[in-house]
Amino acid sequence: MTLSVDQFQSEQDEWRLRNFPGTKDSALILLGVMEELGELAHAHLKTAQGIRGTKEEHEIAARDSIGDMLVYMADYCNRQGWRLQEILEETWDEVKRRDWTANSTDGKVSSR
Image 1 (tube, rainbow, N blue to C red):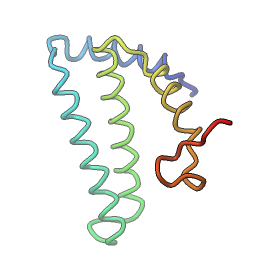
Image 2: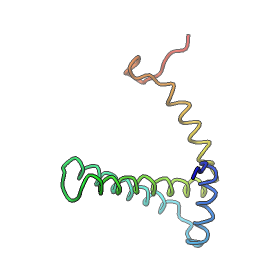
Image 3: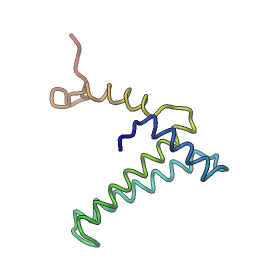
């Protein structure tokens, strides 16, 4: 299945309104992102330590955390009236022009 960022964001908003119609506090969404980031860190740490599960189990947990963070970020953007696709495009356009090998101070390449 191919899903565009805009379609994902629209579907997430519909899902959220159906499942959590009364939630208004965007700070709770950010706390959800933080919780998922902690779960990703946990999976990464346990993989590196080689304990509390297999590499495959930790990979499943890590991928789940990343997906959940994306859902939370779509929710946050919906509540702010922002297009996640637009933010992604703007940010990536800026980041991909950085060259940390050529300029280790700030990554910016001077245009001549």
